[in-house]
Image 1: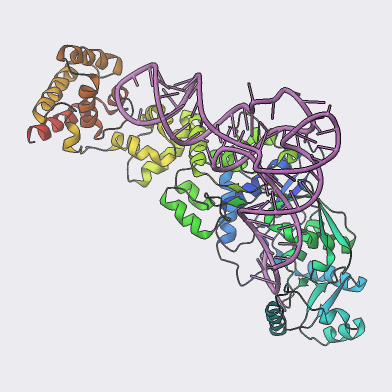
Image 2 (image 1 turned 90 degrees about the horizontal axis):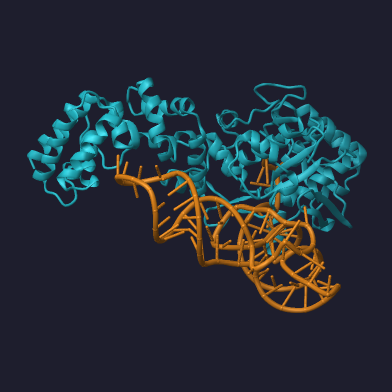
Length: 493
RNA sequence: GCCCCCAUCGUCUAGUGGACCAGGACGCAGCCCUUUCAAGGCUAAAACCGGAGUUCGAAUCUCCGUGGGGGCACCA
């Protein structure tokens, strides 16, 4: 276990919806920070102006807060190493890029995008790997400096070593060795003066004193480049960890936008913003995400504090993981069952309100224990408990007819139930159930038939929480009213 | 095409050379409980990608295959 405080960061681009994988990455970073008493930092990699989407930053900060992954430093809360948006850090990158050019480790490049495109196309035609041809690498530094001073458009490229190998060390995967001839002289600073991801991230990780870079495996192929940038400066390297990617449920390819739409049809999503609406709770989502890329031998139901305690960067998984929404359902239901009655009631209330139902708080507190173990998602409270808050229920007439009986016989059962219940001083379940059971005995019918009719009459549905406890909450008056209405329906059949 | 990464039940995973006829979880099947639906309890089926090597001993180390994934932008 790491004991020195870790400074870690989540560095998303505000270019789309906050993805599940971002949540998982945030979680792992958060866990390491909390476990070591370090800091979790949010930094926005917003250097691709064209792709930056309004609202995307808000979605990320909202998503993190909803999940309970509070960050210690970030664009909206500031911190000692700000600003935390890369577009606000231009001079810092320019300063560092200049230093690299000074050292001879980088150089200005005046090639136009059009020329580069042409070169690329020709290379592809010759079935070569596309790469920068090095035209400006060999320019005289003095000439280049004069052209820059004259205001000529240019980018800054890293002067990569051309022979030998680069060995980059990943904490999870060990040494990754790549021959340097496979590298390009990558662009560090774009014509617009903003850094590319590669450069911006390395500079900021250094400036922000990041100790552990925990990110997805999509960065693995550029990892040696990043290491070369850090080494060109002579900076200390952080601990690098590239964890597993999330794959489509089929395991074929990484999650895409299309998969989000597909998942929505089944009441799931790969976007964090949808989770709450779909009735998932942060505890469930977090537990689910945590176990894709990290395995525990036993007791895999964990709350955030428990995860903080047990998380271990030495036991992460390197192989990609196919997402399994059934497992999300399972963890969500499990964590719902772990909530206190008051907590669950408070979380359920908005879902009733959303349906236009007026919630009686005292009743809700009594309802929660009845439906708790039936909920997979919070919005399941509607099919299970909406009837408590409706004035009338409208049962499907056919559902009122018990199996093995006809409408007339069923009406008779309902009438007897009405008599028995109206004769009771109270409708508390301990009072109401014994006489009803006695009636079942003497009638020769079975409990399913009798209780089934009453259930449909009183709740309006075939599936409901336990009948007598439910009737107690609904109240004698309403129960009798609903029974009466059911009798009328049956008599008309 | 080139480069890199990965490989245990259908899926997520435990496993760091002997404690493994491979453990847990989801899902699936059966049973129990039960007024419906759940939840819960019990039981079952289900995996070390293939081949060489190292070793007294390999799921674990090495190599080669195969399969899967990621990347090859003035995107991140």
